[in-house]
Length: 132
Image 1 (cartoon, rainbow, N blue to C red):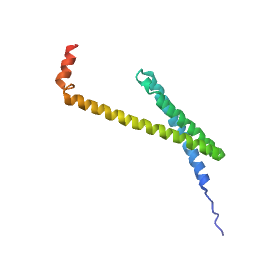
Image 2: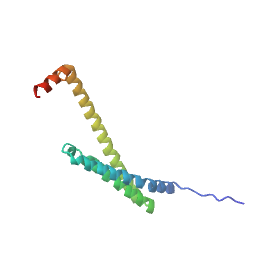
Image 3: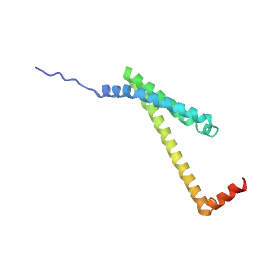
Image 4: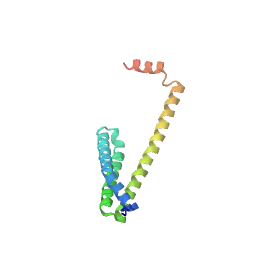
């Protein structure tokens, strides 16, 4: 008796992976859009609310392209999927680098203010008591 051998091609594995991740990409994309919209409610959050909304839209589009690729298996939908993912990761990387730079600048600023005595506990209490 001969055992049947099922051949798994890289394309079928890629399509199965695309199908499995498309739902998660759409879910995370929609939740990111909602988070950006909630940021937009506050005046200060309005300054950067467009970033998570943009990231969410790009990720949702990537999820749609992953679903399309899983169904069709054509090169054009795979190209569109990887293009959207590239955009998402580049934007995420830029946001991460910018956040790190701003965080470091704020930390250095606080350290300078503490070192010069501007933010010492006594001067801070004097400031509070003056305007009470």
